[in-house]
Length: 341
Image 1 (spheres, helix red, strand yellow):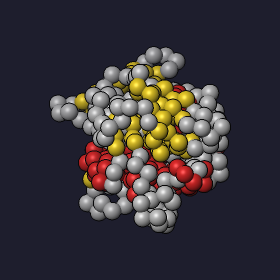
Image 2 (image 1 turned 30 degrees about the vertical axis):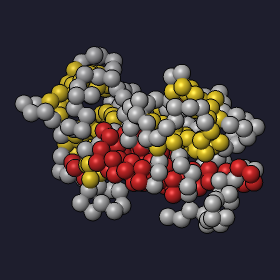
Image 3 (image 1 turned 180 degrees about the vertical axis):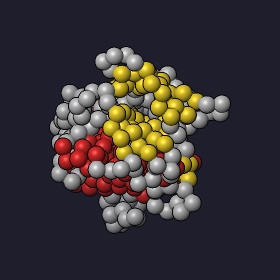
């Protein structure tokens, strides 16, 4: 367990941020600049899904692009510069107070308490679980065509999935790749008719059904060269030559720690109020891919992390008693302005 400050005693934090990635680290940056001294429980695999991304070319401010791990290290360093503390371990239990009291977070047997909690646990790409998927990740196997399509200009590619998201990814990818094959396990698609019609109208896009992926295979080098497909009805196998494949079979939000305590939608994403990050439980805010099943981009996650920190700051400003008020009871006697970018 790695600590960025002394949290060995049970004490009440202003803000605990559970999770890292662009949402968690941006929330930490804004909260620390507001003098909230946030504590981030970042997990062992800190940095979120971008830690699994080789090159990021669509995040503003990096004209030459940047690797995912390097970008996350920079975001973490920036938050730490302003006083963020980190625990590089996993939150194992969360108990939320519904009456505005202190919230409790556990790391194993260690209990932490906070006046406000920002949930930024993110979501995981739903995987196929077939041979070669893990080994060829970032070597031809990807989960975001919007992120990586430009790396496959004039290449043979495929999308695995049959919903609207898969069609959106395929349509976007078709602008770059020489060929896009959409592989779906059933003859029928879950995608809406309008999305199917748009996909069918694209010359270099083919719909291949009903097939499932048996494995992804490399060539002599470490990169993907083809997929082995199996017909869902006959079991017949065929080879599909590929330079890149994008898995679009959904996401799984990491909401298990708060299931039963917060409102979740049908896909288990945390529900927030309107355009805010408020969850409906006082002092609890949610940001990033934990709430977003539409955009799922690093920049949108960072934006919602900013919102969560501001929502938490305003909550603490309005809810804490004058004798404990973290804004007004400064040694200078001055009340600082609301944090700005």
